[in-house]
Every structure is written in structure tokens, then in C-alpha cells.
Image (cartoon, rainbow, N blue to C red; front, side, top):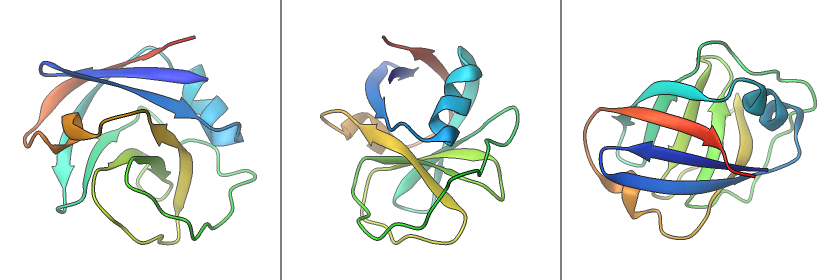
Length: 116
């Protein structure tokens, strides 16, 4: 399961895991959202509704490029720098390749589509 995300003149692909939350995200596609900076290590985009938390578990192998949802807020989280797990994060997948697009500062319209 893959997504293509586009904003400004940037584009990147995300490989989703096989979790219930990732499948729930796929059911919402295509999406027109707004992506914005949050803290110094992530970009976020609010979904039209919260994703399922069924089957979600804590994890300790955090990695740059992780794509998660933060269940309490119902948003997507794209990590472009190191981070630490916090309760409520559900990992959905990983950015494929270069995470440079996520380092572009600012707020932009975001298009998310399924990519095979």
C-alpha cells in the first residue's frame, strides 16, 4: 500500500504498513488537506476524521521518515527529524527515499492519493 503526497512543488511517496489505521487512512483517499510545520521535527495535516485505534501498539524503534497519526488530535504526522514515541502515536508507514520535501517550511495545500 502506497501513497503519493504533493504540496508546493514537492512530492514524496509513503509505504504504508498493514495496520487497521493505515487501511482506514486508505479508505479516506483521495484527500485535500493542509500541511504545516509543528515543532522543529515534523509536519502535520488534520484529517477529516480520526483514524481507528484498534490494534495499535506502542513502539520504540522511532525513525526519521515515519508517518503516524496522533490519535488524540486526529492528524497525520510526518517526521523529518529525530523524535521520541509518545502515547497516542500510531505508526502508519514510512516515507520512501529522501525526506527533503518535508523540510520545506510553511503551510501549503496537500494532496494525498493512493499509489498502487
